[in-house]
Amino acid sequence: MKILAIETSCDETAVAIVEATGDAATAQFRILGNALLSQIDLHRPYGGVFPTLAKREHAKNIVPLLRAALEEAELVREDGQELSEETREEIAAIFTREEGLAEAFFDFVSEIEAPEIDAIAVTAGPGLEPALWVGVNFAKALAKTWNKPLISVNHMEGHIMAALATHVTDTELVIKDVALPVLALLISGGHTQLVAMRQWLSYELVGQTRDDAVGEAFDKVARLLGLPYPGGPEISARAEGARGANIETPHTLPRPMLHDATCDFSFAGLKTAARYLIQSLGDVDDQTRAQIALEFENAATEVLLAKTARALEETGAQTLVLGGGVSANAHIRRSFAEAIAREHPDVSLRIPRAALTTDNAIMIALAGYYHALRSEFADPSTLRANGNASLT
Ligand code: KG4
Ligand code: ZN
Image (cartoon, rainbow, N blue to C red):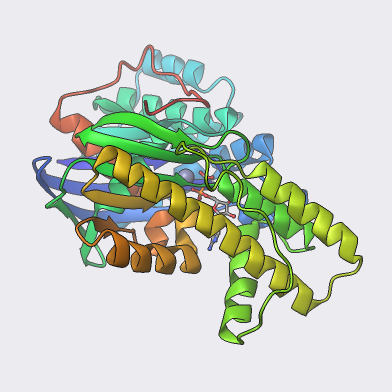
């Protein structure tokens, strides 16, 4: 089946068309079209994602991205469809809070025939609620216009499915030979969670942060060091530079909750310790910046590793996946690969390619397919965006 997937939970607007075959045990995916626009440059001056700006940008860009994805998938037939007055009214009512989107939507859908897709999957949460609504309403309007079933996807589930997938070629993915239970370490700007999947699509929370998410800590420490948003890649580049040059760090930062007997995390204390350290140093030069980045990245990685090791023991997981934007981090990827090979050689570690770790719509199509296989479709009249949607 061909799935059109939409993701607007944060600061990436993304539309993908993926052809999926097979069953849960062995599923194959062909990426037919993939259009993504990052808003990072627009949010950078604010030092973080500004929700109303994110919403406006999603609403402005989603139609051009849909067109681009459909064109890449060769699914555009310029033979318009006249919408009935009733349908137009229903769609205008869906878009009451997305200024200008109804007009752009009508212009586009009335130019083309309904494309040959089988379902529309959309991220309903978690994320920034105003941003999520754009995708959810857009998906509802498309489902209505083209008479297609709708699938509601949890963003974190998308990260898990992307992490389980392996590339066969640049445009082909496969999910197979997954030994259950799966343990997922989900690390992003909004989440730090250890989730066990003992059966397909059934999740259990094993541990989570009690305060800040690890990505948030990366972003805040970067800001304290005078580095631009998003801070994760900035910290990473400086820490890697210091490692490469064998620069040692004279600074020490805490490893919060390292030895506590749960799989929970805390990153607020690490961030605060970094703040005091940076304040105590006065003006920081590039070398000091690199040393602090190195120590911070080492501290965060050690905690992530220790808690994941504990969760592996507790759950007896056979497969470990890393998902979410922070799993793009080179040091974290390397450290996990080494630690798992050394201490848990029986566990299969899967980390997605960097392009699939940050937010995208392909991961939403993958997760959507698993729901479609179970005929889990959403009711367009009741589907809502939920910023706090939980997996468990
Ligand atoms: O999953 P994601 O794209 O969006 C959310 O759902 O939050 O994750 C974004 C987060 C940001 O905090 C960003 O700084 C962090 O992922 N990040 C990184 C790296 N690349 C992105 N953190 C550490 N190292 C990186 N290389
Ligand atoms: Zn994400």
